[in-house]
Amino acid sequence: MLDHFTLMVLHALLIAVFFAFLWKREKQERWRYFWKVFAALVLGAVALGWLMYPFPRP
Image (tube, rainbow, N blue to C red; front, top):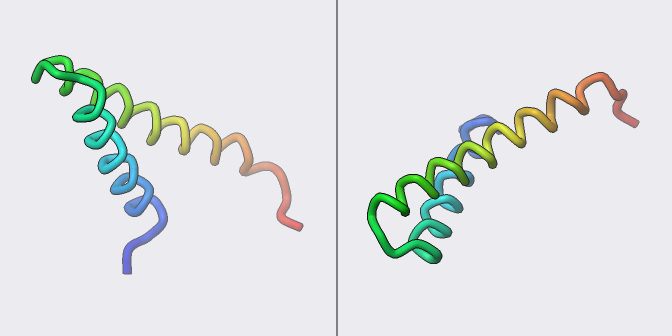
């Protein structure tokens, strides 16, 4: 079974590929946009999780 982080990275990968092909025409633009979206999704989720860590669960 896959852990949460692996599933999050897979989801970010698929979303980044989808948006790169949807919005960019040139190959180089697609790669650059893909990496920006992928990094934003993964690093944003990790940062948000890290910020929420000190708060207790109900």
